[in-house]
Figure 1 (cartoon, rainbow, N blue to C red):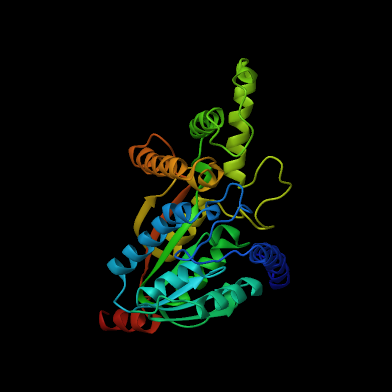
Figure 2: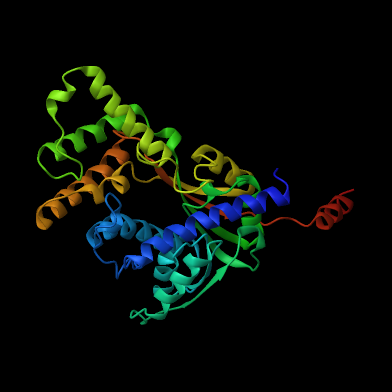
Length: 339
């Protein structure tokens, strides 16, 4: 386990990276709201480039978040969104009648979340929502559900983090985690993405210059293309990028996250999510109607291929339930009664 000073310093570096990221995005008019997303050429390959892609990917994610809440939490539940970033998931939860607190270590992200909330026009059936600047280990309170969406893999000590999640839940409360599982993604999956990108490039529907099919006459050249895509997906960065999303990105893989959750909770559901669309949708180019149809088809194929086992997921869902702890004095008393 890391000492407190080292832990705090690592989180400070992480916060700085996300503060810079959200500041750059806000400077070009980024709106962190699934319902009010705007088109932006700033995003060359991200789903945030086009509201249609935002709905295809993030809209699908929030639908699952809400389905799990309806299944495992009471109506109007008290919900904590850990590492909420700019707050778009927390905002949707509150719009669906839940009482939400979202927190993040990046103060600029919380600033953006608060401004977006202040301008929210969708108030019918709204629960409540508050944003705070905080780290997970500083968080307090007692909640019906805790959400961690793309957060645990950024933490320097996932076991310590998950143990604290347990403290934040009421008895029988649930954790809903949506996290990467890059260790499952194979070269065979990268080959399918290479095929898709290559065909899109040849037809002029990909952001990079058209792929010259002649360049791949040698199998070694295509093999390198596939390897580059594989590295891109498991490291979450392009070949030309020097670093990942943040200093602590991919600190824990899916297996480690799942093991940590199993130590503290009872797993209720473990479901594969998507394989490739989150790094592909925003790279589409061309006539809007046509590329939206292509995007719809690719999203359909991604979900189908994962469900059928044709492709491995790059992300997964886990829903875990807190197991009420029996007080030690009660155990001792029971032993005495049975003596």
